[in-house]
Structure formats: C-alpha cells, structure tokens
Image (cartoon, rainbow, N blue to C red):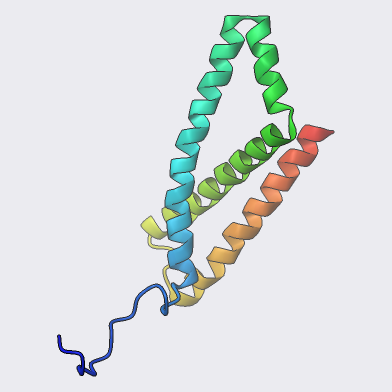
Amino acid sequence: MSKNDSRPLSPHLGIYDLPVTAKLSILHRGTGAALSAGMILLVIALVAAANGEGSWNTMQGFLSSWFGYLVLFGFTATLFYHFCNGIRHMMWDLGKGLEKHEVNKSGPIVLAATGVLTCLTWVIALL
C-alpha cells in the first residue's frame, strides 16, 4: 500500500461501537470466566472450613472485610447476570425473542433483573 493510497480503512473498535447485544454477549462470556474464579474461592472456603476453626476464622475474617464484601457482591452480581442472560439465550434457542425489537428490549430487562436480584439478595443477607 502506498502513502498516497486514499482507500478507506476498515472500521475497528476505535471508531465502531458494538451494538448492546454484542456487548452483553461479551459480558456473558466474561461472567462465565469470573464464575469459574469464584468457584475457586468457594473451594478455598470449604477447605478452610474442613481444616478447623482457625482456618475458618481466617477465611471469615477475609470475607467479612470490606474487600471480601466487594468480592462477594461482585460474585453475586456476576452469578445473577449469567443466570438471567442464560435464560435469555435459552429462549433464543427455543426460537423465541429473536426479532430485532425483542432482542433490544430483552437486554435492558436482563440488566434490570440482575440489579434487582443482586440488591434483593444482599438486603436479605444483611438483615
């Protein structure tokens, strides 16, 4: 390609904005990976509980710290997003909700359901 070539460049992520559906799909894959990491934390907690009171108290100290609460809140939000978006994908597999206006409507519903379920869970847990 020469310096004076005036052909347009193909669009890339710097100038092309992904549709909301694509962003939610990427987030679904990311939350799946994050849930795998969260399962490692669950295994560590179970091992700490099996190792005795001292190990469990250390684990409980971490989980009840501000950072532990942040990790647990993030894990809860991740779990509910992946669950709600999984239901959305299952409906698509059944051939329902595939029209463009339905797809665009179901994305915000998934996000709202994630927020409501996460907050509801934490309100109940902290009471």
